[in-house]
Length: 232
Image (cartoon, rainbow, N blue to C red; front, side):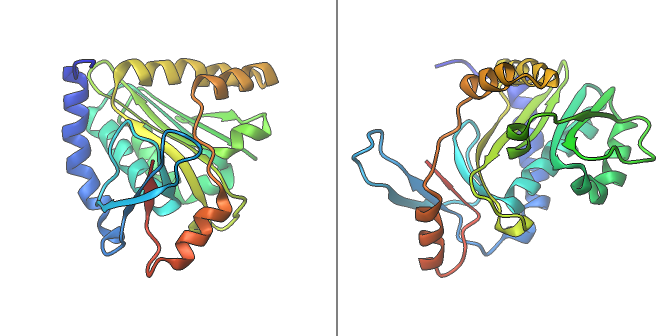
């Protein structure tokens, strides 16, 4: 077992403080955990209900929960007051409602880099926009913060084809491990080339589990209230 670093402890303390505020609108939802067997033959089972997913564990996440986790990492960046924040938006049209918030963050830390397809938003001179020049990249939702004293990352991939925000489902995880954060940051920056080889290398380096979308939807329909996530 790798020992928890002081950097991770600082990030976790800040995370626990900010997630309480951002998760308030999600209260009342049965955040059920779905535990999957190690072998393909073993059937999935339902575990106990929890309020917040564990770090460093893959989860099936709803878009509202991902947004709460993203805002938490953004708050950690603002409190830290230094470092780099990288955020991917599936399309830059989705950035508009967060524009004011990200402009504020850009004045608080060293660098803010935003990824996404579409036209670069106006009035954001202090933000570095990067074109997501490969269609596979558009499936990812990532918020990564890297500074000398505090690091955090949320990385998810959309598994369904929903267009409406509330209907999107993602598989992913969040972590405060400094080695993992820096590794993801380094490899993600290589995607600026847009080369298929780089994209394939990225997906092999951090493979996210594949889930059967029909099975997930069937379970959600049977549930009395839609859970915000499942872990496996």
